[in-house]
Length: 123
Image 1: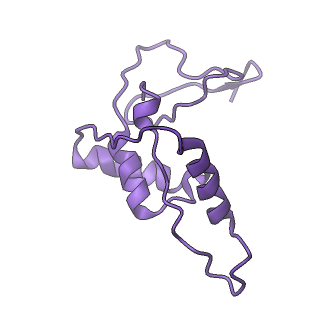
Image 2 (image 1 turned 180 degrees about the vertical axis):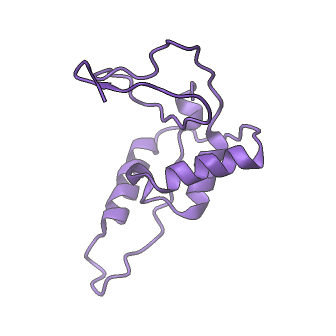
Image 3 (image 1 turned 120 degrees about the horizontal axis):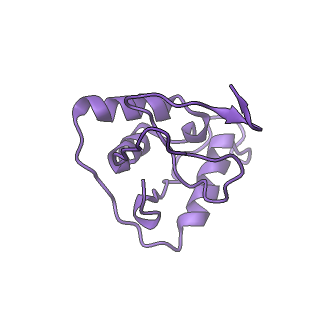
């Protein structure tokens, strides 16, 4: 995931709360509104990176169970999965460093392994 603007997904805000009060907003409604307001000024272009069905399903499984994407509809999750692109990282490379400001990427590990260190300690 290397092109920030092309990977932006504008989330539809048309889903209404199923609670009895029409004025009470759910976390899902609030999350969608926040994402929409951030992306409103961007020129949205749907990005679809070719991938195998098994790769797409692996990505979809990973993001659909992640709390960051729980406000997304099935269609939105499919659009997100389509936008993922492979990134091959050589052994010994740092993928994410704690405290980095550029945390705008989301990784799904398809093959291989990683070591995780928090505050310098191996986890």
